Image (cartoon, rainbow, N blue to C red; front, side, top):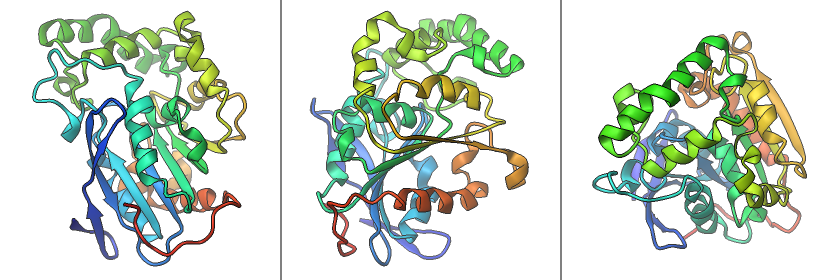
Length: 305
């Protein structure tokens, strides 16, 4: 157990080790709710982004009465092996196994369980075998990954990365040494292969003939969702989001386009969770609290074990 000093108060944190269904051990941080408990919340992060990036949001939500869990996915940050060379995994493991373990850890059967996703975190909801335990989800910067949805200059850069730069790096290193480009945490070879393959399709893995089972799984999701994307997000502009979320065809969906001029700041792909975005966070938490499953009673502020 430890303490982080947030914007207003000290936030009490625990550092549980989660165990996925295949036995893989995952590093996590749990921020304890202050005051009256309003809900449990899982922060599902983006590809190649360590959980520490979401600390300020997690602290803010805990100060508003949420128990918040962040995790490092397998192969990333404190959940990574000593070397990524030779480390085997599927990109889908982050949703099917790692975040599924987070859901089991945070679900106490009484308290509403909420989901905030960033980029991949918006993909991951449909990969969960236990998605029915999520009361509502609010996701930022989720898109289909296809360069054709991106602004022209960004599309050129991304195509150059996939076709020339990253294949050379992977050939030399044996994994996706993303950090060499200053673009995120290094990623396992399996993530690179899957990501590269699906980004050639306008609707990501929904267009992959070998992924029909995943499309069927997404069709089972009924969790109310909000997908918010900044109009200046070069990797996941609203049109990219709209292409992807068609896969959530039975979900009560809402979408929101965020305009930087409204918030007097640039947002891009990472700005959703920087301190300048704090005014948006209360809107997110209020939206989530508007979805209260009737089967839950109001518990006391105790963090789930």
